[in-house]
Length: 409
Image (cartoon, rainbow, N blue to C red; front, top):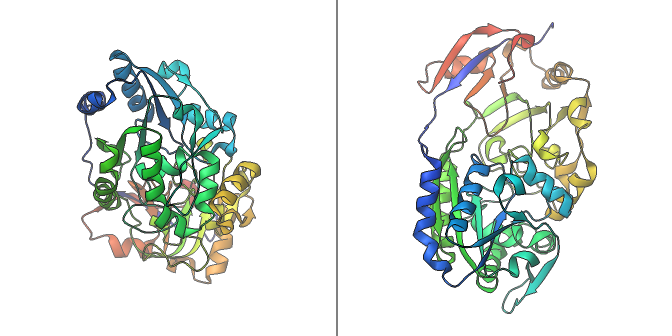
């Protein structure tokens, strides 16, 4: 293809520290807290919509451990408005991660029905999943990570799942109706209320390394959620793989999706939050973002597509507008569902981006990544390569190749 930049494949050297024996580690953490469930018979475990490494294995191991110790276990979707805010949609999301009744050996009770809890002293009303509330106790499990909407001491993790996850669509709407203030100021006190009133016994906190492997798995009591999650968030942020350079003319993203980031394209990598009036989360400056595809695990939910400037017909044709709009409207940040320019294919989108940038092809600062979560390998153009070639964290694989000769990553 004429007039497209040549690219070189780069291997990024990242910290690969991770838990080697997942099952043994999970069982060990369960053993530390089993005594907290004395007197309980039926336990609900909340399963979210986040893409988590070893998710099905960890979930099954926890369930099996408690079953072996005489407890009846049920699974409840704890994902707010995701899955199109329907019971059926949330079952589909879990199934895409390998979490089914057959695989887990436990019933999944999926419902959008909630119970309202006491909200005395809070600015907002409080709700919790009815099926979970009717159990003797609740376990939550979530990955600790930087949020896609704001920066704070607590962002996305156990507190968020306890509040917006277990609170289903109704509490997600309630918190998001306050905008960023709701997430920054109301989430933690609401999560504490849910934990107390709905008998949340423990939360399993996960942190992943830059290769999307399980680095930390830790059992925490509700009174530990706040302080420990603050520490774990710092570790999580340190383990976000970043772009090779902050300033790019064009960033090509092979895929976006809910399993990759809450808004498909992680602003903790690209910088722009996509929320009018809010400053970027990083120092990244990207002129044009192209996205080629939507992951199957997203089930058509393309929230965050508005972060892109150009998308392909392939991505556009996979969008389930009902699911996308439900999630976007619940979040209250409508900009994120805006449809970018749609071009026939990846190469056509790239030609448009080059035209917009107004530079000679040989001078373009460009990178191509698989997605904003997986960046152990990526491609860069010659100007970017010249900037990073002496950095020991980057290793060139082969030489420069034409666009049509690049691999999928």
